[in-house]
Image (cartoon, rainbow, N blue to C red; front, side):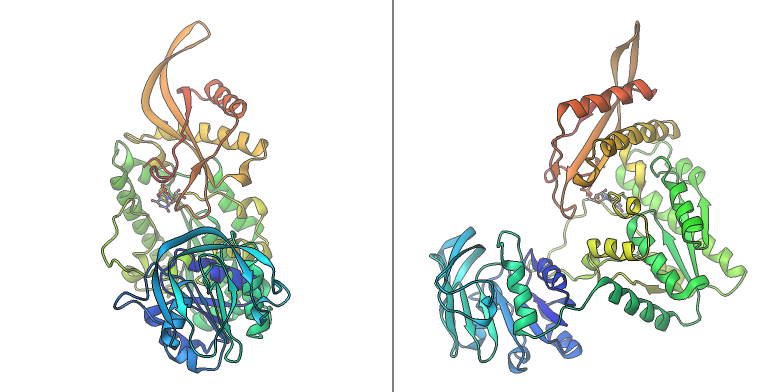
Length: 516
Ligand code: XMP
């Protein structure tokens, strides 16, 4: 495996992605715990990430000395290059002309890192983002590439197999970057690229069996991809020892609750307890307008209902000792923080985080090492239907946060119908996969309209669609007007209660994806 030491760059996760795409397992650890992780993993090679820090600041992070003494290959990227130089006897200085964005490097020497990719004397596009630069090399190193802003754009000590680059090979703006990283792991470090989803699946099944033994496991299904993939995988490992509980809060999209039930019971033959709790949830939410209050109510009720179901199950057998969750790698990676200050809560996401401690259960989290698209690939090998795997993200509180103003059952029904028409048109137009998330929001605003010979006075419906890579930032989707016109006409004609449709053209930031 490959150890990636994170010094806090925004793009460290991409290094892990590229290494895995090369078929090699990799783990990211924050620099503070790198020493212990290095001893535990005994990796075949180490990659040092970039960082917002500067090696010239007092107390700036360093790599554990052990990685340089172990005789294994090390690749430093940006700050990783700086700290490698600083630690091995070179020099790094702040640069008065910062370099940011696209740059061209020239290959000064052939070296193993560039083999089969970049030849001596050629020029190549890379992505730079740095304020400091190397000014003197440690003993044993030579310059293998230069750029106008970075005379030490790439350096190498081929005897010790230490390489470092000032640019970022992990981002797509360095077109050959993925090949370079693959070269580092395959050719420099000699690690074969045989890590695949089916290998992962077999390992994961073995680990689940070893962890769970003969005990029972319960799993909360949300209707989303992650919990579904976790449940199907665990079912493959331990069969009937698993019980799935689907708390249906009545805030799902049209038909989605039934789809989950059918998929599990009929397609996979997995025992599923379907709790229809719509009356309870909608009862408590009726009239509630504040977004955070909505989330708190939903979170609390979810735990209460789930707990009660788990108790019922325990009556007809052993109580479950384990709780399964579809936690993904991005939730697990500890973020490296330099400010130390608390971050502001914009929205308190509802999840089942409070459950295990309260119910005194241990966690089974078979997807902890995977990124979202890897979970999708695993889902495919497990036979989940493509329509389910490719689903847009859907928030835990569901339609409750898409009805600003007080919630009522009637408003939820109106929204559900309009939302279904909108998604139907998106699918028909072949746009579904180009969009990260699309949904309708029923506004608490009434406007005057005219239909036939009569006056109408009904609600406004807002349509939202965004593109995004991770949900952290987003752009509104640039539909053509004909499409929007078609959706608006259908909604106004078919849904009683809506007489005006508008499109939201706010990006994130400054907006958020959801309205609440
Ligand atoms: P925002 O609205 O914060 O959303 O830009 C980013 C992503 O998170 C989803 N979201 C939630 N998911 N519980 C969830 O499980 C929540 O309370 C919640 N609020 C927003 C949102 O749909 C988008 O994918």
